[in-house]
Length: 367
Image 1 (tube, one colour):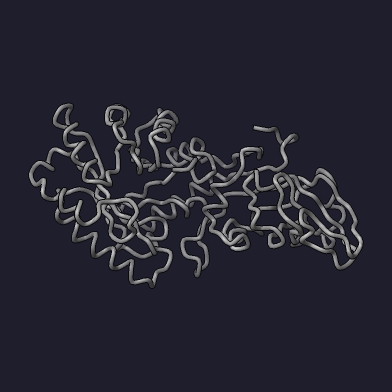
Image 2 (cartoon, rainbow, N blue to C red):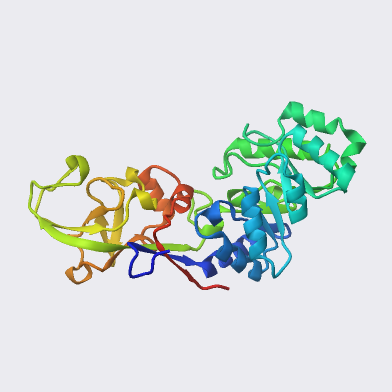
């Protein structure tokens, strides 16, 4: 990782804010257990520092996407017990998963039968079963669910720890799909051996107690993203990204900016070129649409975002704050990940998970 002096931008991650968000979500979903989804490198913010901070705060359940993430996380939490579920366990890795003490989320009837066989020879291990209630993504579809139910008493040897599904429209509270999925899930879990149940993701927590069940899976909201786009965001912002100004120049009316000359200056203006680009996850779709802040002044992005550079019109910004080596706020109090995502035509998840490796990272407020 580049030093602060070498890097084109400084990414600050507020661990105290992430912990506060987890505590808020845990209180809102009580008495259900509030776990943390830390897949994709904790949504781009760093799985090891984030998980350690949450673990110290009392979080004892974590969801990851892959076996390698689970192994990395287990090493980081060696100082205390925690349950680690793997959303997408690899085929044929039963020994490694079991030896690591991980809980695989089984989405196919073949997976369930394979783990039953593993349990008969090596003893039952904790597993989760995922049911498809309307996403047609991962989870047992109707025919495979019936195949699993038909195993009957043999399922007692599975070590079933959790029955789960995933809401497709939880960020739209009025969408009837939410209640339909809850109804389907309630009916399905009643036909399986008794186990804890989990349906709610971050947005699902805000749908109310009917959706909390035994365990909720807090993900995006932990990192400051809004659970519902149409409502005020109750979560604390957890990231700040400050980009370094490399060069400042005055451009006369009629001049053009960047590849393709897609921006033409209509007045004499001052431009600042900043050392970030799409190679750093600052999306090219922000070309001629994005914005940053210099102090309290909004400065529009002009021209195309290139691989390593982006240009802002800083004409209205205080001159004392605009010079080589100074910084502009790319993400922060004035430009949240959700707000930047709206400008880019995407979602806050993509903004966070795309945060680049070239940034100098600073972790603050470890709880």
